[in-house]
Image (cartoon, rainbow, N blue to C red):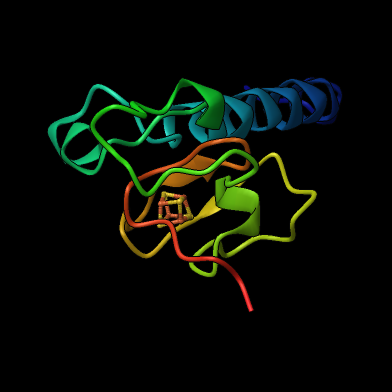
Length: 102
Ligand code: SF4
């Protein structure tokens, strides 16, 4: 039988569990550069690692955080991008579809 005391003890455990779960989800939601879609676009989580030989349009200083398609604020570590629905790209990332903001 569940007593009030047991119930009160149960709440913090659940809240912690949910917080840990959502953190894991945010991590899991990052685009995997090795996924076929990301690889096809030349996406890298670190713009400086972009394949400059293959993607001649890359220029130093370009990153998801200053791309017109980046859905977060420039200071956000990660945010959505319409090319990767339901996923997040790294603010420091880059892909060949980069479009300069503004
Ligand atoms: Fe990053 Fe822009 Fe490519 Fe999206 S389109 S992954 S925001 S560089």
